[in-house]
Amino acid sequence: MKNKKVKIIKIIISIIILILSLICFKYIKDMNILPNKYLYLFLLILLIINLIAIFLSFKKGKITKIISGILYILIGVISILGIKYSSATIKYLNKGFNNNVETTTYNVIVLKNSNYKELKDLNNTKMGYLFNDVDNDKYLDKIKEEIDVELKEEDFLTIYTDLINNEISAIIINEAYLDIIEEQYKDFSDNTKILYSLNIKNKVKTNNDILKELKPVNIYISGSDSRSNTITDSTLSDVNIIVTLNPKTHTMLLTNIPRDYYVQLHGTTGTKDKLTHAGLYGIEMSKNTLEDLFGIEIDYSIKLGFQSVVEIVDLVGGIEIYSDTAFNSFHKKGWYVKKGINYMDGEKALAYARERYAYSDGDSHRGRNQQQVIEAIFNKIVADKTILLKYDSLLSKFSKLYRTDIPKEFVTLLIKQQLEDMSSWTIEKQSVEGKGTLGQTYSMPGPNLYITIPNQDTINSAVQKINEVSK
Image 1: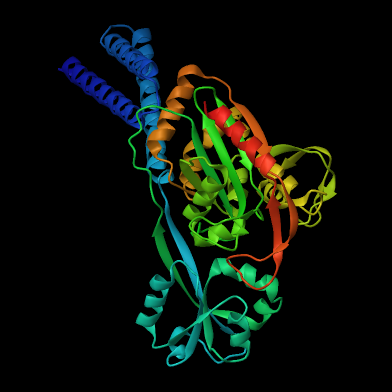
Image 2: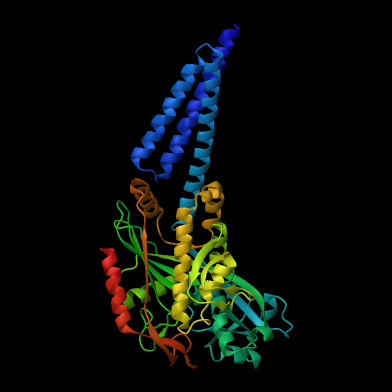
């Protein structure tokens, strides 16, 4: 009777472990990143270990039972870890790609010394708004649902002066425009306060082509000047990099474009604008403007903010970068950057990526610094094996730090190919150049702003290189 019970227990344990193994295999298969040869080799090994463990568990002898128990524990640990890590990967792939719903924050701003305490206090008053904002209808309708207010169309030159002169009681403005106003009116922050904020969600156009094989792609990276943890849609684009990725030759080309590049915004005529201002109309405007400038197709885009850089670098445990210049950091007071290799945490990496005052070529050198930061993060992720120990934690945090229309199918195909051939990648960098001057801009008519007149020869060379890498 006792032997029969023991036998039944052994059968139950064997079935549980086998089911656990099959569940693990299904999770790993659903990730869709392992080449078939590795996927089915893993299944075969798992089944063989199961069979050996089952066989030994029914054999007589203390040693065989110990070995069987060890194999059961081994299978259980492998299965649980496999389920854990593959589940985290699947969750990340679903959340971290094609997550291109972006938010634009609009602030209702009043004078700091006014008696307005909440939005309803502005009933039956006059409110100013910028005439050229892309989401005017959306946020103005929401305001009119809350309060009865007269709306007045304004431009950058009048909106603040009208507020100061009490011709309007409040202004409602895209948060991204505040830096531009503060450039012209240094006392803006001291004299005003935010009374109310609302968010407008925008779905960025998605490339819905079903991917069956990898091909060379161009990916636009837009670095927002937003300091918050929220990746907003309409913000100045201080970082503009086109990543040309060729999975066949394992080559990555980073092309930097200065933020003040004087370009024709897509779909506009007349006065040109600074490239950074294109971001005020959404990432699609920046992307399409660069397509016009270079005469290429940009397949996907990624948007991240300043805080994203800090968190990503800290998540991977910091990076090392070679600086060709020694300087005292402008953006991180008290930090001295030596000529040579510097270890950087997230805040230092961001300060290094933003630095321009230490260099004679200013913004051009800053662009090269930004390329270095991207390359260093990429190399750290690829080379640092300890990252696997915090794999699931990293993935859960990564997906919140950027917005992209890259489909997960592209990523899974890329990972699968990398695991198939384990080839190393070549990273190349280039920048387009120009000459600094002052000029009128489309987005902020009136004052002369600093702009960079493009050097067409450097653009032609950059396009040629992009086309070469894409072959």
